[in-house]
Image (cartoon, rainbow, N blue to C red; front, side):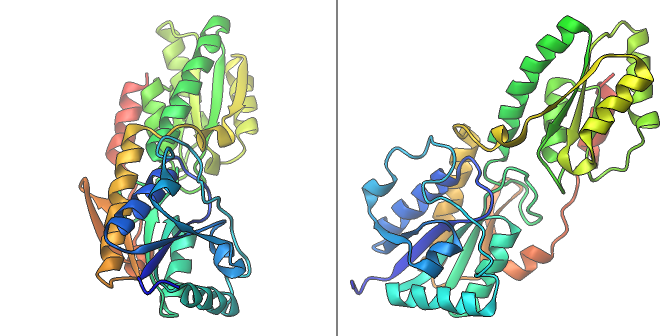
Length: 323
């Protein structure tokens, strides 16, 4: 085994466009600093099962534009036990790994904190399309997911207009309505339903549709975040109350895939570089984040205890202009 210090990189939880750009940045930055780089397949499972490989500069060639993650991703029940964490730490020591870059969401960061507790420094990078990491105003994959949803909804609107229909479109976001909110504004949705705001169809959707009908509008787009409730029931209720033929489209995992946008590639690259800088300085138990457009870092526990702030101002803008 080389005497050079090594860092490992893994992707965990749901995949997000831009993860590959982050992996590439981590590998290139570390190698340029004279560190060895170990790629870990399938998240924490790879550390438990020894599913790892030595990376070089060419290991990450031609991946910056690819969706998904070349390291694959998975969730691990075994790792979520004290014995599992100790086993993963032992694997790191056997490989000469002193630090791990973990690309994922809150659950992945809790795993990173546990591993740091076993003496392996860890730095997290927020990679999730939902933009639901409280410590960071932006997460890798968010922009691509929104652009994908916007393109799909624009296509749906064409047929909704042709048939004078209402299209209820469910986008991803169980706890966070950011995709729904920003995509809804971008496509001119009549109504946007998000988990952060209580809603009443009789107050928040039906009157808006009726009011716009009186001004000549004949087709409608209603955006629903998946965490809101049963989108099929919402579509049926709208049709029953308005008499407008209503169709439901669930965009689903199409939002996870595809080539990452410029923003996701750049942000992922900057975050990956920052993570390597921290580990190279012997600093762990941190989460890389974006604050006021700048790349910063927080203690993992502090980051996990933060409460996400919903953009009320943007939501009110959506209400005023979607008429």
